[in-house]
Length: 118
Image (tube, rainbow, N blue to C red; front, side, top):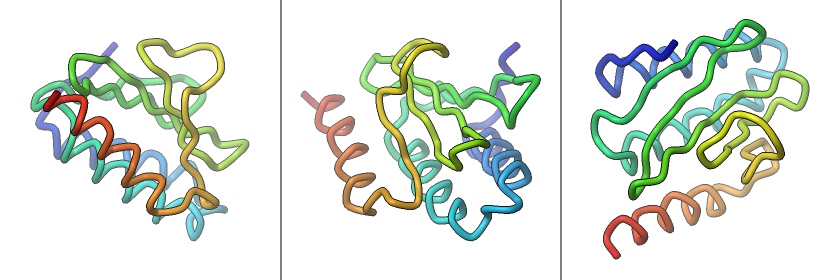
């Protein structure tokens, strides 16, 4: 079940749940989750952000970018945020973790911005 509140409150709930799940890796995860939630907040279509409960993790963050529905999931085993395009299963389209360069994250969300405007 998806819970839709304000985009900011939804992102805060996602970030809080990820940071609780990542307690042992918080130092590595904090910069990543800040970058990802910031990118989602600035680039997602307003009102499209929703948090879906997940039994074995912090939940799934859904958002729409340029008409494309995407989902972000924190993987506790890898300490990475996984991105999938329109589905929750299969291999992730993109991974965000401590080894991701800040510019990689900026470029990813920037490409979504360009896609939205184009």
